[in-house]
Length: 268
Image 1 (spheres, rainbow, N blue to C red):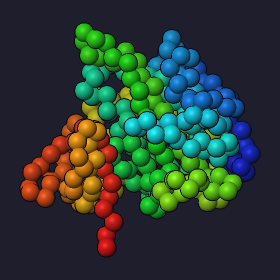
Image 2 (cartoon, one colour; image 1 turned 30 degrees about the horizontal axis):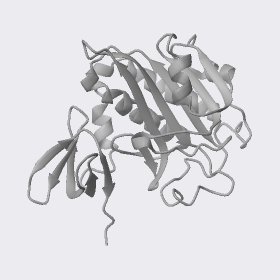
Image 3 (cartoon, one colour; image 1 turned 180 degrees about the vertical axis):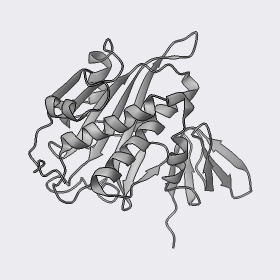
């Protein structure tokens, strides 16, 4: 293991660049503190080439899906955004998030000899705790429906923050490393390396096979929480070719979910 990370190692543009395997000339910007890497990336990376990378030591207003905040303390996580200009339609934009989830899972498994799982659609879990959240924000062309540009945000809890996680998330959040034994620069670079491989053939979506295998939901009883309707119980049957979660309700109705949230029902 790389012993460079000791809780105070700074993220480094030069070190990350040295570890990249593709597009090594991409723009990389590292900040000490930002409100949100996604917010800043939308402006800073708008005119950059595909794959520009922005990272921060901490975020004061990190955010996730559904308007939630993302706890981003200094020096113990990776908070980064990748500026993208994918040539895909709006209906396939979810593939960016799916590819990123597989990339993060691969990277963490490789570097930590871990066995991470993916919770549809955008979270990475390790030993029952959430260690990573992903948020993709895209701008679409009105006429064609194609994506003009997108910002892929990835937040990884590398080590436990001093004092632990806040009360509202301490039962759900975890860190990938209990010991400070892997460089955050190495983790960031490996995530980008794995994502670059998948992004190169994004539309083929061959990574959906791996995404399904990594799912921690298939076969589980869940509570489905639609955005605009009442929640209901269902059993997760599969993840389809459009990355929709296929569930079967109590009355036998099979539905394909493209949005909303699900939560596993604890076994009594």
